[in-house]
Image 1 (tube, helix red, strand yellow):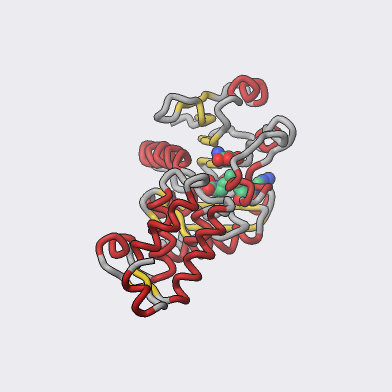
Image 2 (cartoon, rainbow, N blue to C red):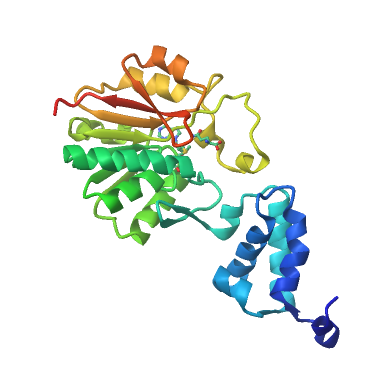
Amino acid sequence: MDARENVTGVERKVWDLIRELSSELKNVAENPVLEAILIAAKVLGVRKEDVVTKDIIVSEKEKSIIKELVEKRANGYPLHYILGEKEFMGLSFFVEEGVFIPRPETEELVEMALDLIKRYGLRVVADVGTGSGAIGVSIAKFSGAIVFATDISEKAVEVSLKNAKRHGVLDRFVVKRGRFLEPFEKDYEKIEMILSNPPYVKMSARLPQDVLFEPSEALFAGEDGLDFYREFFRRYSTEGKIVLMEIGEDQVEELKKIVPGAAFLKDTSGRYRFLHINRRSS
Ligand code: SAM
Ligand code: GLN
């Protein structure tokens, strides 16, 4: 117990609290101190830098909220659902339970897509399974393209729209609820590029505890994790289009059979993580 708490009995400096609480996170977090700081900053409504540098006094009420959230996190609940946001492509995306938390590897897909959009002067791009809108909203933000986005989840439609608004691209990001590109069937000819980070996890896979709090329809795709690709490429012709999709690192051999003619691209750590088709003539 520190001297200040002895005096007032109700106040506590934030740094003491972080020291105490971060130890609870050591089994779930790669950086327990940073996570405790981020949670405290969220509750106190200050920047994380202020938590580190200023002697902020925490009230009894704030302390109990911070403790409760740290305990939730210690039970595996994802940090970004607690914070309500996740950074992707340098943008802050609003996220909440029921929507997939964007991953850093998907930023590589967006970077590659932006290069191709520029190189070919593409105007119409689709994002299948948009989730928080991470791919589609970033594409609309960093290129002039119009994005047609879909998702089977109503929550994803709602959250991606909120993110499109947050990043000022509501005029170029059109999202509809539905499977694959069903909601944009009549616009299919106009779509020049198809992007997706679909579900690709095997039904039997053992996932880290925090991933299990994310929606299962965002992750799992049948026994071998390939159901999405199988159905997508059975339904849709890629003629004249460019396709870039994220894949699981052990799926290349199976995907070569499902999508003959597709190329596979490595991520920056040297793993094959993307399926690529380029059937544009110029
Ligand atoms: N694109 C986001 C990202 O990269 O952060 C979300 C990716 S998450 C792995 C996959 C998303 O696809 C989920 O939001 C899920 O609801 C959606 N989804 C799954 N099957 C789908 C289908 N057949 N058609 C459209 N969306 C689908
Ligand atoms: N890579 C994701 C994970 O962390 C799986 C995402 C997906 O199925 N698209 O579990």
